[in-house]
Amino acid sequence: ISPFTITIAQAELDDLQHRLEQTRFAAQLPAATATSTPVPIPRPTATPTPTPSPTPAPAPQTPNDDWQFGVPTNYLEELATYWRTHYDWRAAERELNQYPQFTTVIDGQNIHFLHIRSAETGATPLLLTHGWPGSFVEFLGVVPPLTDPVRHRGQASEAFDVVIPSIPGFGFSSPVSGNDWSTARIATTWLELMTRLGYDRFGVQGGDLGASISPEVARLAPDRVIGVHVNGSLGMPVWALSDDEKLSLTELERDRVARVEAFMQNEFGYIAIQSTRPQTIAAALVDSPVGQLAWIVDKFREWTYPHEALPDTVIGRDRLLTNVMIYWLTRTASSAAWVGYAQPASWGEPKVASGVPTAAIMFAHDVGIRRYAERENTIVRWSDVDHGGHFAALEQPALLVDDLRAFFGSLR
Image (cartoon, rainbow, N blue to C red; front, top):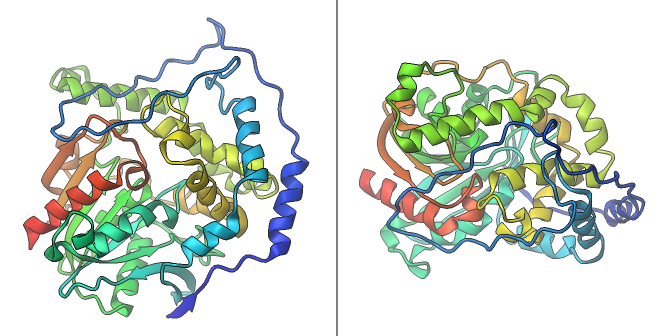
């Protein structure tokens, strides 16, 4: 295990500046017509929650701000201009380097990770796994309250030692080595990482890809994993439901099924491309910073909450751009797409329950359904929240931390 510091050469930043200055933007498409409008995607139905929190006000829409066909050109130009004139990578670099970072090689693959130990005695080791199009940057906001709970509305007994690896092929865990990076292979790597760090017993948490990888860690080593906590897609019905089965669903469950069906029809394109032609799309993304920006921003807009708000108003423009920079500077558009979506395991493949206690928190944008999650997981805690989006640690860090404290506190 070797200490790691992010140090980007000035020539890289100068090259980025030049590319931003020379960007050619596409003409704005006209608004959708009645014959060209895709099937509308239902938006989350509110459900009661005892802990409401304020959400960003919807951003004012300007002429031609039509997201039907992707990121509007005028919005993309505004973000790119800010990136070129106001965003400060060196400031972001200093912030990231405040967290202890390391690299280690496991089975031929370079693994980058953050490891932040709590000062509290007996802190619970916790492994956090990000997803696509995210990075380890997602979790920066939850590190202080997890590792230092006394200063953040908690008790010393709620402290965690936090380990945040970058998935192979993502960010500084590159270049990718080997041709099999299924969720089981990544989970095996995570187990070895925790062994090297001296953690025999630990908890796992994740969203998006992390929500698939984290339960896999427990399946491989149920004797080592204290508990599994996920946000997002656990129990997402990607198969077709019969009419009788739909009739048995609650109103909330029907809403989630409808949104999954609409997603599979209208938003599945990026998965189709990244799972079959990751190298082709990467040729554009690795060469064009604005192309990389648009590819990521499109998902942040679709998956943050409320849907009417622009993504940079939900999570902050600088944080959004820092996440984009991780992909840009490491040239990992291809390997992240390949590892995330082009691996052998298919969506909906049956899994064997590990028996490890599992908790799930579903924010407003999320589409997991408990009855389906229970087929493959030992669900002991399930929370439905009527606000918040797909990027839980970025959008609702306090609620995520509270749920983690409550879940792992019950296991102690």
